[in-house]
Image 1 (cartoon, helix red, strand yellow):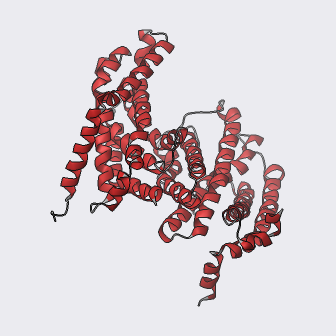
Image 2: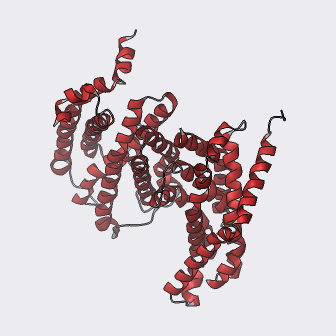
Image 3: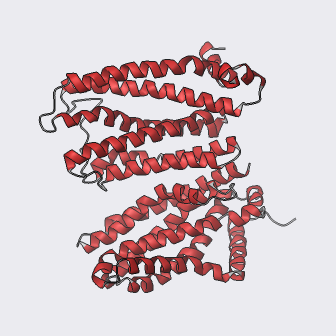
Length: 228
Length: 249
């Protein structure tokens, strides 16, 4: 009989497993970045491709592109594990379900949102994003994308019992995402008008701290409901 | 056993609740209709016109009570959902889910009347201001709860999942409540206070009180009627349901 698994050892095991699974289908991890690129291209073409028209709205368009790309990848958060029964094993595991949910959400963020963050300067260049806004945009996204992932984990957990969730995920996630978008894009709009953007960033950081504690608990409760 | 406590336990039984709801739902509708009729009469014919807004301010007597109800119903839904999650009371699941469509209706009325009021007063049907935006998000939350409840096959699991969403959504309520205080808003600030001095003239307040009570009574009627229908649907096939005259039709 081996020693009981600790929080850290289960986290290591889960992250190693997720990383290995991801590496075997490495093409999938590029999908969110590719989707964001498509959104950016469509916006640029719809606005006529003029620098004067694109530059003022570039920050907002990038926020929307990142948000939509995250929404698209939400369904994969627990779906595979629900289908092959791993999620039931999570519930039986001797560590809290919320901890496993938090680790999984972190891995999901690292594999879907982090590539997007890396691609943001390139996407910004496509939209003629003013250079002085790039740093602010990256800080806002670095605070905002984990917040979106955590809120999304609650929604994904609520819909995990369904065979096809489709538009319902978007309908459930939208009300929770709106404040993040408002403050994230608002920080850029404020700095463009010469105002201080730190207030919005601090609110995003406060929201992140709060959801970091509460969202895994809510998502764990939702998984228990869906699977019992 | 304490008679009140015994009555409360009996109410959790589906046949007993069916009889209770069948008896009291018409009273809620009827009294609510009467009280709202008095309030509307006062609002449209008795109360003097506003010195700035003229007659168009009278839409307030529908807008404000339904706005209050849109938030109060959400809070009540979350309370029922929390009770249902903790104590697994089936009736509370039914009541929580019966709240959602009614609250969505009140939210829709709030947005529509506000929009109609906004056109002559602000010169625009819609403005992306904090109060209006948060109320719109509230509507989306209601729709999300209804959608989630209808998307899961097992009724009890569906009610618990949608109830959890309602509890998560409660964080929005203080944001709506204080949105006119925290941000600069086109929407006017708080003018009516339960305690202390209202900045609304006393001659204009009384129909509002009637409307507030009327919408509450009407809500109780609608809640009982909806919960009763859902209760019958869940219990379909049981022997006592075949005895209910409305269900056998």
